Image: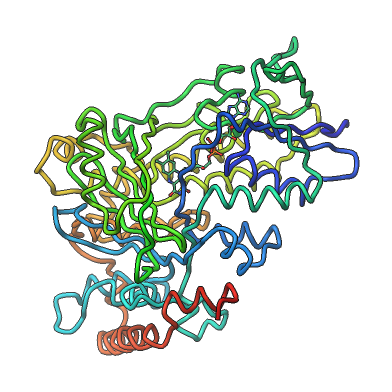
Length: 498
Ligand code: FAD
């Protein structure tokens, strides 16, 4: 079996350099060349600042030192997201990372909270998340490995400058043997079997390959354009199709969380970095004009703007297949759900893991291709459902945008999840699910999907024992978070500033 000898990556955004850095580490065999082509004139999408906890395992897999990474990318720590105005205009809830309390005898913790929540002193659901207590205190600590420590319940991700992250990974990739070619691809040649064989740059240079990874962003130059793989449009559920982004001055204090504020025809993000704050309005062009969007974005800033707003257009959806012939697409070339819940960079990571697991020989097996496509379709649809939930589960009626969101039919897979939760607060649990049970519970309860009952197994535990354990958790978490260093202090220590 002939191995892939010439691996070509098209695009040098976050996706291109993530896969290049991973390929430099895991796919070099002394004989394989790895080439990345990118165009400085086209540039990158230049947004994408918030992540979810699995990004840490990607960095660890590449042997990246956390302090070096945080310094190089202006990163801050993210313990969760605060949602403002989603369920009802003006209200707020947290989607914290990490465990929600402790499960008792296999019954999910929130079932006990549902059972006892009418009682005095039971507190809010948030009181049972150590990450939530840390967010409220503006403090941060990493998880501890000892399962007896409350710190073992923590999980965290980063906010970072995606452009700096790509640059940071580029250094590692080039040091690991990846060759960078700068230039704009004008033509993509396919052979008699429909495989891509050669790229011709506008200045006439050519790049040959036997396997191609398309990271060309929304253009989807190889998979979409050259191979004609169609796009599944999800805008009937996710109507936001524009974003306007603007940086503002550094936040003080630096919250260890992203904020997502629902507005009349979309929502606005606020992402604190060490050197600036990232802000952006995501909106539906059918419900809001660009001028209105710009005014809304700027008037929602908490810090003074630094620079002009930049507009981006997109259509939520995914390619019908992510792997066709000898081309795999990653990142925006493969699909884009929505920036809400920060899953895009994670989907790049997921695709890299699956691709390397199924990395082909030159003669590509259809079984491997089908497996990859099935796994990635599942991953995108899972994220899609979680994001749609935020729009569907609203009681807002103040604008057409929210009235439409509330009334829309959702995919059956999500409708079943909501129905299951409404009955007894149950969330289906699979080990490979990206968002664990607490994430679904945070959003469903945060946006007022009220279960009619609770899991009857919660009755099999003695109430006194449960209530005492809940009291200890609540007070223990609040106390533990107060002992953590302030977020700024932690960052300074990590990056050698203290
Ligand atoms: P790009 O950054 O667009 O890179 C494409 C590359 O292809 C560039 O190098 C370009 O030069 C090259 N290229 C294209 N055409 C050619 C050509 N003809 N010749 C040569 N080179 C070419 N993700 C998150 O995880 N968290 C977030 O908070 C988040 N927020 C987002 C907010 C918005 C509004 C948007 C639109 C996206 C957001 N994302 C977020 C997604 C995230 O930005 C992307 O997933 C990530 O940056 C990867 O982009 P990419 O590398 O696929 O594409």
